[in-house]
Amino acid sequence: MAFQRIRLFLVIAATLLLSFKVSAQDKIWTKDNIEENERTLLRQYQKYSKKPGKEKLQKDFLASFQERVSFHQSVVDPIQKEVETEQKDWLSLINSLRSLQYIYQTTASVLSQNQITYHDYTQTLDSTESVALASLYARAQKALGSTSMPHRFSIAYRALTLVTSLSPGYKNSTAMLEQIKVQGIKTVYIRPVQMGNQGNYIQIQGKGNAPLGDYMNEQLVQATQNALGYTLVTSTAAKADYEIVCEWTSIDFGNSTFLRTSYERRATVNKQEVTATVHYTTETIPLSSRFKVSIIDTKNGNVMDNMNIASSDLVKHVTATYTGNGDALSYEDAQMVRASNSNAIMKVKTAQVQLLFDYQIKEQILTFLNRNVAW
Image 1 (tube, helix red, strand yellow):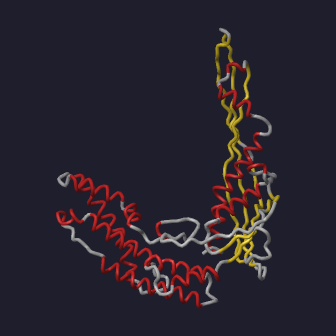
Image 2 (cartoon, rainbow, N blue to C red):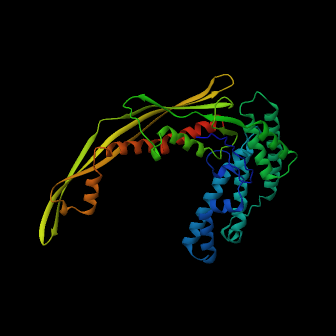
Image 3 (tube, rainbow, N blue to C red):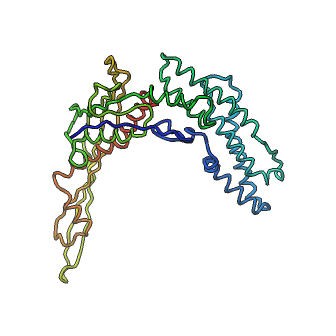
């Protein structure tokens, strides 16, 4: 299999991906974002404004209005009172101020009749954004100038992306971002996943009859396509800045428990009644595993960080047998009987181990990489 170098391209947009997952707090909200966040209030305002004499509609609107305003004020007030530091959460402050502005502007037509004072946040927003720009820009400058600062490229990149979202072209923020992309991107090699042999281990295969280790590597590569701050190399660890070492140290299947049920079946075949008894057995098997992931700095061979991931699940396997005339079985009975063979349990175990990786282990690995390698 020919190896190829995978380059991850960074896409700068107004709504920036800062991690593997995108949340509302990872971007400066647009009007559409704000409207979606305040959708319940908007619906209740629209109903109430059409029928202002309806007491229930008024009550629902006022309750929702107070709830949303109080929430955003609870975000705004403590941040505004904070002494300005590098950790000040400008993003949450600006997002909440924008939402408050939207709420008051949208519902202005019904506020006075409910003795609610209208608040205009335009000046507050303008002054806040001006101070935020200066603070974030200074934060980025300090990070880039401090070669010993941990995650300095990440800090600068996040700050400058917010700066360009608020004010495209602010000072030389665009040039600084380009500098970061040249200097700050690291190369990462994900070593093929090692399958340990501790515990009640079984050699299992993944999709397409490929070893599960290969499947897991493919999944990790795909999941990190949008990661910021590093480029994956798949040919060798020698040229990479960091090496990711993954080992599934143990896979254990515990003692099975069984639940057995029987059902009588009757059918008419050639005007003759035939009968059968179908026996269903549900086998439940506890599954537990330990998975270890480490990040190695290839320049000195030191382990930057490592994490042990413990996970567990239950494997459920249903089989069926019957006594009597098979013609009496239902279609589902016959299908289950045909599928019940000695190899079926191994396939079920294999599938469950793969699901354990997909839904429990992989996400923790990505969070670990995001914390230590990505921006």
